[in-house]
Image 1: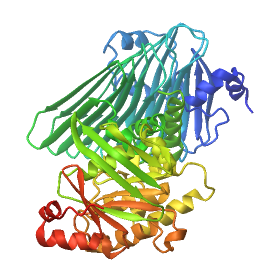
Image 2: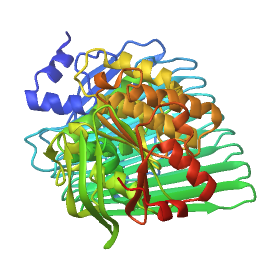
Image 3: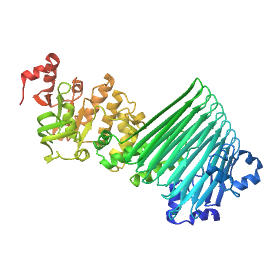
Length: 371
Length: 248
């Protein structure tokens, strides 16, 4: 076992559990590579998949100067105060994952960003999937159990080449005093596919993010799926944006939101800029205890022959559904949990089984804590 | 098995059943007939214990125990089962998952039981689908029967099992219901009892039924041989029951 992996194992039991809940496998079982950053210290970098490299941000730049062409290309440096904060860092941390032409991961690469002692953790991540590459990344972001307050600020830029396929599964497991401001954007070339899954079912003070996908190549596909639970006092301002810039491009933005007392703003926006494009936004919300679910779907069509649609619904579990299951012998509590479980069960086509299991495990954990 | 005594049921503040009495012994199957809106479904829903169907007077005894104030799942656990006429769609809940939850961890070969029951109801391709979502009339009924097979209740209520079902499916439904009700066994060895709402009587081609009851305006107007009642109703309509009033 390397020293770096030892560092993950050296964490206390509770923090190790928190990492696992965020999808991290300390022993790298079912993983093709790993990146572990604690505060501003990169503790572990590993890749055992041919054609796929996992590097620290600075190392990537010194080894491959061409990587600088990808920095601040998808995300504007002066987009907001958080991007400006990242841009002014002298020693930016974060990971760079490069999947060479035609390479393929069977198991996902895991990236763990762990906020432990610093007041602020900042990262700048770059993912490059060259032509025909297939890359699966699971990012687990979590904070130490003893962490009383702190912020995580991150910029992630993803570049998906012609016929490349990237799935990005992000599981957030922060604490109730942690604020999180990720800024990310993806550029998708011809027939590239981007599947983004976001899961956050644990308390957080504030999350604010709205990743953007620029579908620039013909037939590019983007699908955002978000499964979120807003616990009491949590403020989640979440969105996703798809800009359809090429014929045949399509996007789907899917959200399942449950509040048990917190506030969830679910934004979605699709822009149909050229003909032969289509996109759909779907947001379903369930209010289990008084809280706020505010769905704001936006669709903007600019040309003939772009098909854009949205549907949003916020409500409670129907009594007749609960009673239907009770008539099968389930108690009211089990019936309710079974229905909620189904509500959150968004199966993502093309997602490796290991990642789907991770999402299911996060739902299991939330279910056990009684939502 | 089941004794219903002077049952009065209100829905939305309006009394629908005005003092219904019924006894079903172990191993017996009864059919419930009556015009639309007569209170047949209300009767089944009240027996199952749904909150909307408020029992204002009378009681329900199951093997001698008063279950009138028990919740739906408590009655289900005691052996009540209901095949819904129009079950709700539950987004995201897979039929297969529900069958697993219904079965619980009590049986070791639970997956085999689910697989073989699904096969017998031609529902194998539906296990991974959201329950009742986009199901046809026949598929909904087959799904309901499949759930009954897994739940394995002692007293099975079936709300119009033939409605919306094509002829081929009626055959499958008929033989499956006969099996659930243990019709292959002699009555003395049978543990299952049934109460079936039917308009057409097609189901009677597949299983022997012990008694028929006609419910009109929330009251029983006739008890007797179900085939005879059906024949009469087909010929002269339910008005004949009002005139005849053959109450035992």
